[in-house]
Length: 72
Image: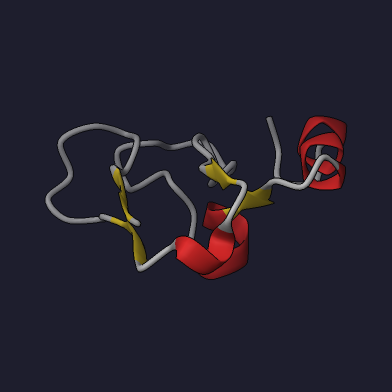
């Protein structure tokens, strides 16, 4: 699924906020993934004001997906 997908648009219209594309500048893929798509994972919340911290962890690289860390 791409960040500009109809699915994410529908979820946004339903009141969910997607954190990966709205709070980070990079993607959820790292150098272990050779294709151009940079987003593999998304995190949706219904109360973004309750998010204390959100991070896409890029180091160490142990998979082609970066871990997502959410503190509420």
